[in-house]
Length: 274
Image (cartoon, rainbow, N blue to C red; front, side, top):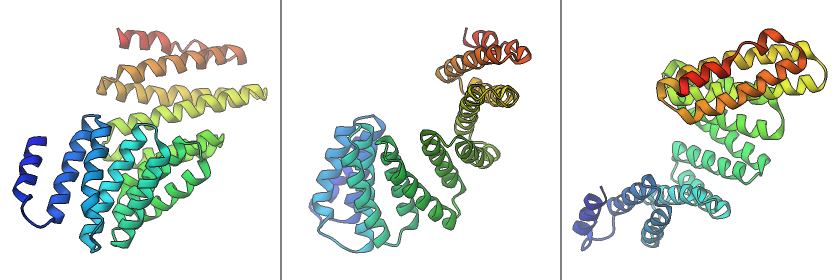
């Protein structure tokens, strides 16, 4: 792929710089990104932007915005969040100026996740919420589901567990009918994790009946998650579930719910992982 893009750029080298040339640079950057070569991604985008920034029509602004966006993703992968946020901000401004609602929404969501990873949860919620409004306006249900997942992560970190569960459920309600197995599996995992934390919180408050109800949810959500992760052959996720199920079983013993305690999911998972 890199050779093909390079050949294309060679053909354009003697011609005036064009949007097509910028898109070829973007293609090379995407290949570097897919190969986890994040410094290569950044170098390619930076080289292209030196030329792209001289122009100001809509197509050029979209090309610049795409380059800034993937630069932001590459910096985010390197945990360089300040740089990532700076490039996402440039991308948002350019997409917005070009009237590209989808591009603006994606860059907003990406910046929201960068803020989340930087533990700036209020700004994360603001950007993710704004991106959801645009995705809803466009009618991109898959992307709307992504914002529900991301907002669920924000609420989880804020300790707003009921709100987190609501967001994950909304994401699941969109993704499962669409047949998106990997993200559906993640939703069930997230819901199981939230339910376990709610069960622990109820146990600490000595409300064992409520804790037991949440543990029932843990079993139900993880059972569905296991089914999907087995189909996906994702043994790492299955091992994570094994650890959480072991915690759930220990909690069931603590609150005296022997029916849940003896449900014995860990042994069933051991069989899956062999």
